[in-house]
Image (cartoon, rainbow, N blue to C red; front, top):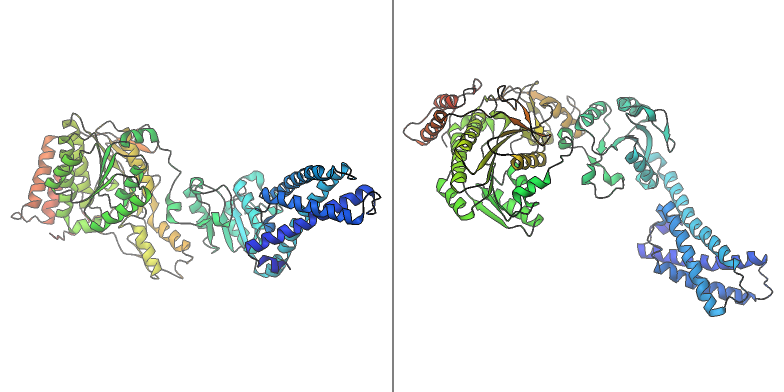
Length: 630
């Protein structure tokens, strides 16, 4: 019978419920009269009349049920909320039906006490039927699937964990059995939540999994710190149980915690940090009703900057990008998300001085976010001239245009590889920083700010997508050195902080984003292998290939002489700006000119030597000197 009802369509189930309630409403009145008179042989009323009144009451009450959305709840999920719905609905139905019956019969031969008895019986019969259905259904499901039940461990015995436990128990068809909780709160240890033990702290995960035969682990801690999540994954590595986590509270569409609320762990969860609290007012002041230009708009950072900017209502967003495909993809994405955005896509190269001048003349941007650059270290080691022309000359062209056309704010996106650079890419980005710092002193209107940060997850050329591809192919996963580490942050996090730095800057600052603690690439690779359900050494190997030309073991975000000053935002620090002499800028100009002079035909060593004069801390001992002109 239960199986038959479960297989009915929704409208058929509703029809069955209506018929059931119709019958029970009539029965409730019939029984109420019998109980009141202690007999169904009522002296003042015939049996036929009693049945007639019962039918009238049932019809009226069923209509009232329908008018008050009585059939929204599903019987298989009957809970205390549904019982309250039955109590309220029964009260309305009883009062309404007796009121109508009063006008029809003046309640002749119907004692007033029958009203209360009828209501109580209605609650018992309607509520009892619903809960009986759920109990029998759950029993059948559990009996049928008991051998197929999957044991799960919930990490976190707080509100979210308790709510998730209740949800699992109300959905036996999931075939999940919560066998234990673990939680770092010692006050909860050796206690029970709905008869489920809190087995200890998070360090007990391997022991608990072995004891209870855990098949899956659910981390029911919203906004769990990435450091703690990494620790949990390391503890679970020997258990080989899949892990699911709750997303950030801000990402959840509803407050309910169920199986669908959880997601697989990705690297952003492992590397990411706390949610950023932005000073939205200052960012909105910088962007709203202004013309904003983003260079390199189709790249990883550039495209996310555009997404963030669009939220603040710019007068016009001008996106400047050299890649036709990236520009097209960006345009489609932005217009889909922000159909009312005044968007101007322009394909072009920051090295094209004439085009840049025309762009600034025609669009008169008030804020420029310069994200266009060559960033891939090994490729730039082999193509140093292109790095010089794009990263240095391109920045110089934009900076001079910003001054000429009175741009209010110019924010250059830099990199931690500009600190004590050991490669062409880092040295050229440091030279670009120098250009911005020098021109701040020359400008009476434009405010120049530079924002420096480390690696972002998911960007083109990042190590993370490379690892994922290698794992999909079966390995090996290649790492240059077992001790190499890097700073990481998510693309949205970096983009938000770039805007924040640009908004609080007063001109001439070199901002450094709080990158947290550096992460060993080897640990990252191992965690990614584990997240894919694989075992290092058994399913997939890790190989060390040696440091590449220009590659560091450790990245830095500040020079020793730059210091580390606070700003109005806790995740944005400020370096002490160093004075830039005119002679340094003269060297920059000579390098740009020499790089474009076909008669000079610069060698790698000549480019390196010229860069060292501009950036004295540049050391390229790991470079090969291989040079490609085009």
